[in-house]
Length: 102
Image 1 (spheres, helix red, strand yellow):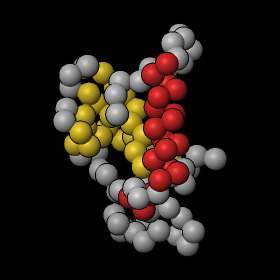
Image 2 (cartoon, helix red, strand yellow):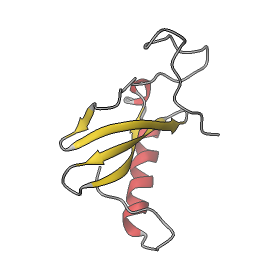
Image 3 (cartoon, one colour):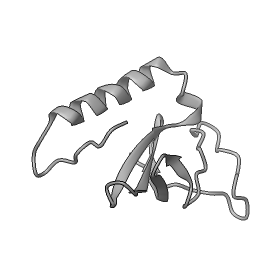
Image 4 (tube, one colour):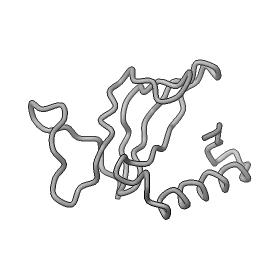
């Protein structure tokens, strides 16, 4: 299940709930890569967070999937995200999203 991005009441950097994943706490307007800026968080799961991102070069809204900070050193999480990215690059269909680089 995908959970929406949440912040604690009155605290922009609330401590995570027990058992919850750690968040980057990116705010709208944060640059996450050259020419790519967070518009808003969309959700996430145990391993990743998902953000709506503005790409200045493509002049388009994109969705960025980012490993959570506590999963950066998790080889399985990196491998799974890489596998998803590689698969996305090989697929081409009007009903599927397109990959624009990692």
